[in-house]
Length: 380
Ligand SMILES: *Cc1c(COP(=O)(O)O)cnc(C)c1O
Image (cartoon, rainbow, N blue to C red; front, side, top):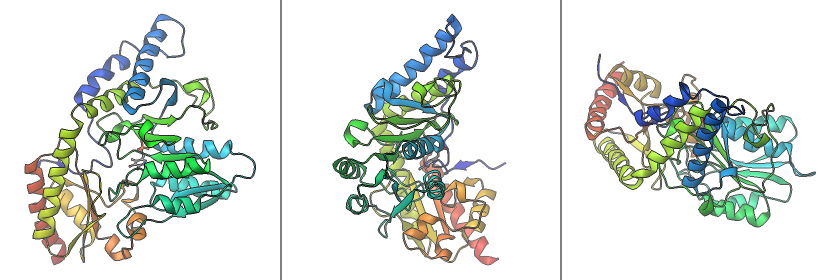
């Protein structure tokens, strides 16, 4: 079998072995329910508390502002549905961007069916949102505004701090999906000033199935999963202690050599992009200058993206057609369409997403595989 080259880290990352080691005791001997009063339960509580403390410290929050969930999709649902459920009388408008992740977009359209008014802020042709567009869209009947920190398909980094300022000035709750930026950039809630933000462990070397919603002290939202008293009544269900420990460990590890690793990842991406643009005809980079270090989205004009993706896969290269959630379907990416690409060009675009385990050799191999795959696909 050919060696696998994994350039799909925006979909998920491999579990760091140090994270697995930190989690293992909580999957084996410390099996207690964190709600139980006995010794085994108390050991689980200790693990959960330490994980919460660590996460809080790392993002500049307080212990009781960190809520563990099952994934960022759930965190996003909790932020949006939770604030809709506890909205003040007469506040029915939700402001989001048109390039949010499916977990935000589909939640917004469900709330629309329940009487919410959804306003969508559009990006410019490079994929950037502007805080002043939000300012203009936010009125006194708005219960929440959402701006993702960085786009998962094209990597564009958004002005979340200015967005939060605009929301705070208008007295409106603000929320940012920080999934793609967490573990890559040094995010701090104090610096950002948002009311809520979400992230998920599996995008930075942690396990799948555990996420966080940061909720600033004083912000009141209703739970959407009711049950026990877990997560201070915001999210019922027996705590995933091993998951929380894994998330906290992965986040801590990501911060240890953050600048070095970020510049390494960016170096790899820059090499990939510059080789693609100079060596492959009709290739266009989407997303402009200020993007995440690891994400490159390229349109290979005139080449079917799906066919190219399969050809890459046959040669052991894992990449993606924009969002993982939309691969397998033939719908062109909503993000690429929002930045003005035609359906054809959107379907000719591939996302390469790199992370710290990737190497220069892999980048060079991917360029060669791309060239031969494009040749194969065009000959059909
Ligand atoms: C992956 C992703 C999510 C969903 O995270 P899960 O933990 O897999 O539910 C949400 N938002 C963005 C931007 C993502 O990239």
